[in-house]
Image (cartoon, rainbow, N blue to C red; front, side):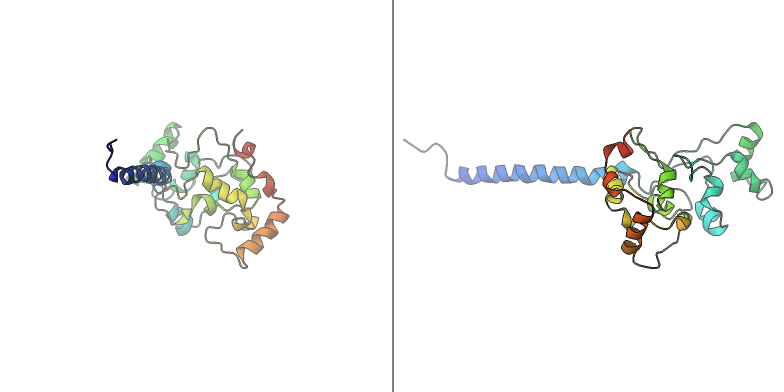
Length: 218
């Protein structure tokens, strides 16, 4: 019986099969990279705000503590957005004629709050409590980055599940003494791992429970 297929067909079949396999792997890798990219995570994306508020100026320049504006961060699940009256504590006396601050003055006159655009916006199915992180020694900079160096607020980390789990699985790499939680430029005086392990015991952080689904999904 005559041979139907040329012997090179075997080679072509192998190349096609392995080529398809590599293509699928490559596509999966590409999708994973896209999912971690700023296009999806919004990392370093600056959003338009009613007033171009500069954390760099107010934190580094003037030395305002985080808690002056975010008053509920130590005892509530949310950090809180400052009311216009908080802004006017200072701006009733300085930059009183600044055109840039007119939306603040109008809000104060009319009682209508400024509509800030949320920068760190977690999905509705994720529960995050600011106060418990503060109590356990997680610094603001760990999640929000060097806010004191940001002329305009932006998201510094992906806030994706794998990023959160990296801390929940090994909190010793990130925790610090509570008195330094709000200090942007704090660095440990000893090895972070040694300090972290000590603080994990001191603050009674139950590492074995931190990856339980119900911690973040309720």
